[in-house]
Length: 164
Image (cartoon, rainbow, N blue to C red; front, side, top):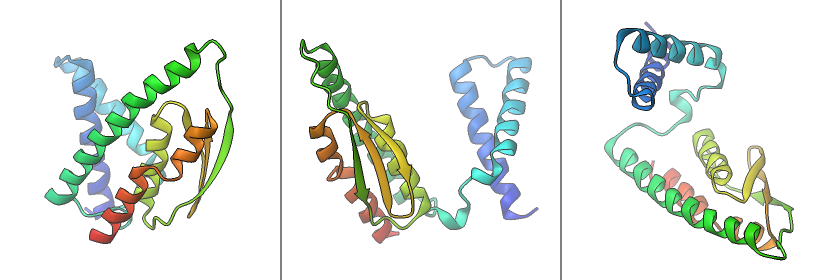
């Protein structure tokens, strides 16, 4: 069995565990449906899966780094929720939608995907385009658009790439 199939099996198992965690049911029909659904998702998205060569190695240091990144991202999402709620509930609703072009020097595909998804997860911002070095981000206000260009995850991802 080649590495690609092992990668598919591993991703299927991760999705299956996620299915079990969300469903909360451990009876056989539910588990069988989850396993089949996970396998179908991996099969139909197999050309979108980042290969082992395109992502950082899986080791304790990188896993701990990713957990720390996740907690900082959750904090940013929490803060952004309140900022967007303030803007929307403000009597004058000071929304000034804008598109922010960004040039990001991140080499790995996995890091660019992580950055694009991180931007989109934060309320008030949306990654519209993510090319090799260029990102186009939609922001709800001018201030959030200016802040996104110097957002801390960009420097954290660059630092992670240097350490790998």
